Image (cartoon, rainbow, N blue to C red):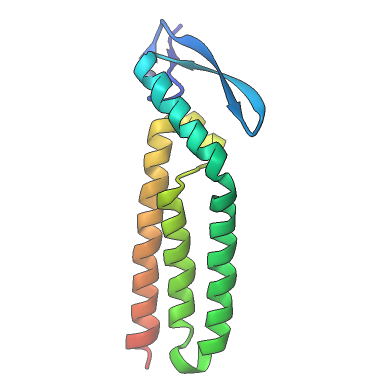
Length: 139
Ligand SMILES: [Zn+2]
């Protein structure tokens, strides 16, 4: 029976079990080689130190965006606030591409991270589109 590498999701019959520490909880995953192990450990360490910034970034983008939306609703139909919500969340996701464990299980960690970055980019583009519609087209 072949299994998939946790990091690159390549199928292999010779996977190595390794221990990871994430949020102080040990987790056992299987990887296909030393390169994958190194990349995975680097990312887990990055995620572990930045998970607070990730949460804070999202909460801040949404709250700040909502405040600006209500404050400027009569001026720009909430264009700037909407832009801040989408572009802010998008930037957070590009800088800290931490996606759900389900996505990781489905795609492997490496592709899941890339999909997080793509999602972030789409969110920024949406922010620009909404801003354009609200600020330029509606008035
Ligand atoms: Zn691998």
